[in-house]
Length: 229
Image (cartoon, helix red, strand yellow):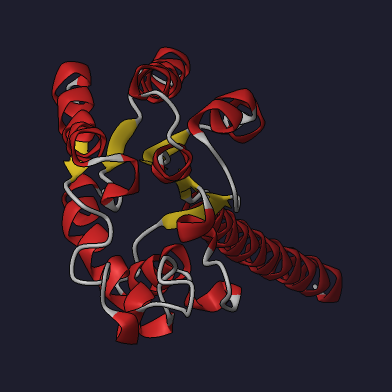
């Protein structure tokens, strides 16, 4: 009789242990599943889409800390809205459309969701023939579109003082709208709207915006960029 009781007790004990192990295993699997899902979601969120600002010293934030440049201010705005985008500042002081075209491949290794093209100002200040500037801008746009057809492109319009003559300056200004229309891309009519010509918003050279000027430029850019995000 005692042997029967012991056998029965052992069976109950084994059943209890088995149930405990099963519940524990199920709980562990559920926990691992939740951790895995969380990891996947975190990884997906970390894969930010790129916004590439491609330009000259205006984009680079010449004479200022990097944080004061308008691309950096755009990144701050994006972060404040918790949007899943990363801004890349591809500005280089002294850049012309020709040199911009020659180094473009370096910046197209990863697809930009949005490509903002800010070049041509140095061409105008140097009096480079408009045909060449127009050709290079079109070539840059075509290269981006060919490699990444889904990338949205914004062309930043620019204006120059009439040092090279009124006719040249006027044709230069109109060139951007013509290119944008022909290429069927977005345009920022004038990047330095509200900033150009104001000594309080530009460095002593009269060309590059101060930190306050960069803030206005960022607002101008954001107005045209936000609908694309």
